[in-house]
Amino acid sequence: MLRFLIEKEFKQIFRNSFVPKLIIAMPVMMMLVLPWAANQEVKGVKMSIIDNDNSTFSERLIHKLDASSYFRIVDFSPTNDKALNSVEIGDADIILEIQPGFERELVKTGSSKVMISANAVNAMKAGLGSSYLVSILMDYAAELRNEYGGVIKGINPLVIEPTYKFNPRLDYKVFMIPALMVMLLTMLAGFLPALNIVGEKETGTIEQINVTPVKRLMFILSKLIPYWIIGFVVLSLCMGLGWLVYGLKPTGSLLTIYLFSSIYVLVVSGLGLIISNYSNTMQQAMFVTFFFVMILLLMSGLFTPVTSMPNWAQKVTIVNPLKYFIQVMRLVYLKGSAFKELLTPFFALCSFAIVFNTWAVISYRKSR
Image 1 (tube, rainbow, N blue to C red):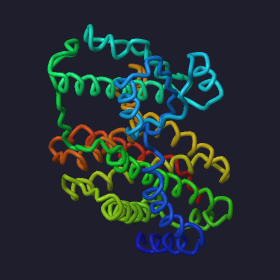
Image 2: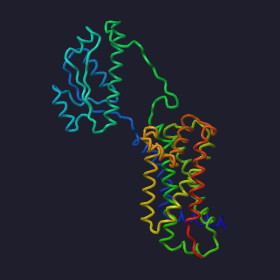
Image 3: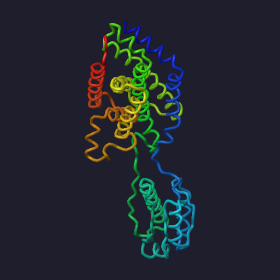
C-alpha cells in the first residue's frame, strides 16, 4: 500500500506545473546568485583623504591605498569639516587625515600620526574598513623601515606571515556555499510537505484518504519519502553546481554528507508535517512555516558564528537542527572531518528526527 501512496504523491507533485520548476530553478538560482550576494567581505569602501603634509611619503601612502581593492578614493578634502560633510551626505564611508609634518616626523622620530574617522551607521563596514586601513598603514610602515635601513626606528621589526588552513584565499563564498545548501534543503523539504497536506485539506482530497484503512504512520511515511528523495536530488544538484561554477568539492566523504542529509531532510520534513497538521489553510501554514524558518536560519550560524551570540542565544541554538547540519557541511566540505568527529551533531539530528516524526504521526487527526 505504501508504494501506491508514494506513487500518488509523485504524480501529485509532477502534475503541479509550478513545483517541479521550483525544485530545479531554486537550487540553480541560489547557487549562482546567493554566494555572491551573501558575502560579508567589505570592498570598495569610499574614502575621503585629507593630506595636510603634501610630501612624497604621504603621496606614496595615497597611491598604496588607491591600489587596494578594499578602498575607493572618492574625495580629497582640504579640511576635516569638508570631509565630514561628504560622509554626512553619503559620498564617503571613511576619512584618513594625514597630519602636517608626516614625513618629517617619520624621519626624525621614527613615528608619525594619522587620524581615521569611520561612519559607524554601518558598523560592520566601519569596523572592517578601519581594520583594513590599519593593516595597510602597518604594511606601509614596514616597507619604509626596510627601504631606509633603520633610519625609521619606531617600527617593530617582527614580521608575521599567517598561513590559513582549509580556506587559504579567505574566500567567503567557500565558507557560505555549504551553508546555503542547508538553507535550500530547509526551504524545499520544510515548506513543501507543509503546504502539500494543507493544500489537500483545502481541496478536500484528504477526506478520501481519511475514509480508507490507511494507517497514520503509513500516511506520514508516504508524505516524507518523496521529499526525502527530492532532498537527495537537490543536494546532488547543488554539489554539482558548486564544483562546476566555484571549483568547490567536499574534502571529506560524500557518504558522510549523504548520511547526514538523509537524517536532516527527515527532520525538516517532519517539522513541516507538524505545521500542516495544525494548520487549516494554506495562508496559515505559510505564515507559521515562515516564522519558524526565519528564526532557525538566523540562529543557525549561517551568517554569524554561534560563538559570537550572547550566552542565552547560544543555549537556544541547542534545539536548532540547522546549526548542527551547517556545522557538519562546513566541517566535511572544508576540513574533511570524519564521521567519528561528528557524533554530537549525528545524535542531535537523530533525536530531532525521532521527535518531530513521532509528533507528526500522533498529531495527524484521521477520521474514520
